[in-house]
Length: 263
Image (tube, rainbow, N blue to C red):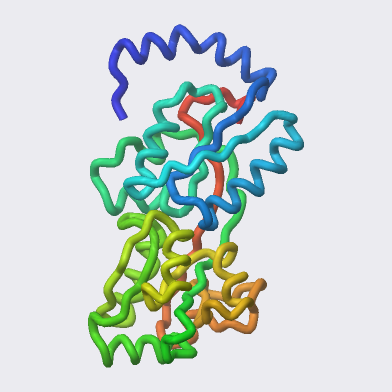
């Protein structure tokens, strides 16, 4: 991302004040921006961590949902914010895969951000609506091959990790499935529970409760090893798609040049 001369001069002029404020960080509320709709794993984790960090640092950490353009609007908002640590980006795996989908991102995930911390890593769950006549990944693949282009697979916007994960499965399994993008995992899960789509992949944080309640049926986990949360559930790799291994992550980043004291 290129900065014009007026912006550069403003940043230089504000640098001493920002550095001094970082010593007493945080001295006011902090905004945590995420580019997806409420109800998804990034949203849930952002609120959980924000609550704990607020208790420790004695300042509010306010979560703001900015669901649009696969999270790129949130990316731009934080990248262009003052580098003082008072606006953070809740980054998921989409943060790292987005450059592979678009050459016109409003910010560079490497150059325009200061990494703060990795908070969680977890596999996705592959789930289906209870009316779908499959109880394993192998059966789902067989159904998709028997009915090419007839199964609807819900998920997050095009260009997100939640989009990439099933695309890789479709490719390795050589099946034709219709991908239906929503504004985030939350809306796609609602659509699946309502029977508007047949299947989806999503984080265990947002899907496990629905599986345990019987609203959804879990077929497998996307990691190479079984999940400690649901150890009875086989991996996709051991159930018909050798080599499949997909892990998502969640963490926080700030604008580049945020003082180390604030980070």
